[in-house]
Image 1: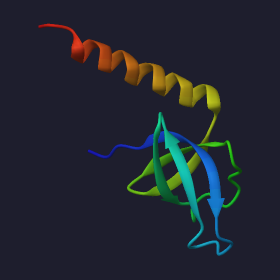
Image 2: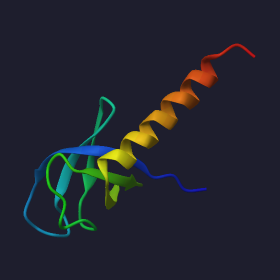
Image 3: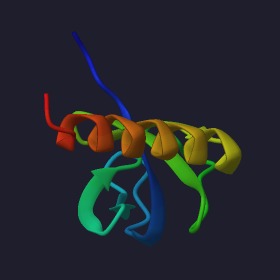
Length: 81
């Protein structure tokens, strides 16, 4: 099973289209991500990240829906069985 997670792009480093990197915020966890697949991305955009690559730009509302779903899963996991 594969999993891609949305995050907010907070900065972009480099000009080479194949090696350009971005710092992506995943709810407080910041990771470096390759931006080769999303040449159109801008800082503050939300991207869907899979194995260290931003694979698409996502709508902020859609990203927020995913974050809400993940918060719900976390709350349910914390509830006593």
